[in-house]
Image 1 (cartoon, protein in one colour):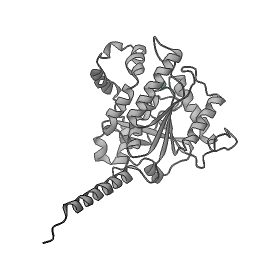
Image 2 (cartoon, protein in one colour):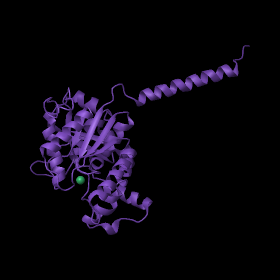
Image 3 (cartoon, rainbow, N blue to C red):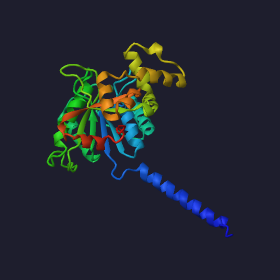
Image 4 (spheres, rainbow, N blue to C red):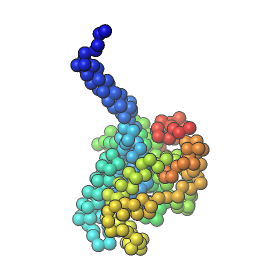
Length: 301
Ligand SMILES: [Zn+2]
């Protein structure tokens, strides 16, 4: 009987491991990675609005960038200016690392954002440079002027990203992206419409961890301005547990319907955490097929 040479077998095993690794690598890296850019007013807004969806995209090999349109230099009760901006930049970088996304912070003052032409040009350049397929931003209905104007700035950029003579130092996009609004609870002049809902249950802890990186916000400023500083635990392990509970959002009946449309009734019933988006009337209007391509994680039917 001709027994296989053990050294020869070893060679085959190595080959098998290399091939399997290669296949896994191919699976992790989609043929054409999607390019997603999320814009928020402050360092921590992108995570709040789309942190779970971003983590899912990143884990599937798609490219995600967060952009904070202001530097966050006003969001604290006892710190401010350049020192706070520096602190918040470092927190944003840590949050980006925890989610696997790139994170840019524009050097505009917090609390003073207006939808000016210079900031519009900054936003146009960011969307172009990222060659975005998908742009996510807040609606211009919000209690905070910085949030509102971030919504307006992105709306103002939606057509201009394709106009060569505007911000002509940065090549225009060949294809207009799909623009989405992130979810909010504001009702006037019109409530949020849940067109697409993403099950983020599997990455909820990662979203919480990204927000935990924003210590100056989650454990200092927001509790102070919201009068709940006394609820924040002292130790880091207790804090993150508290934050997970504090950030949990009840899934509305509209979002549940959108989950059912994307995942089927049975799977949708099991979803504990979700993020929802509304398709903006500006930019490319996606077909049902295009939405499936742009949200490959929503395929549970
Ligand atoms: Zn904010």
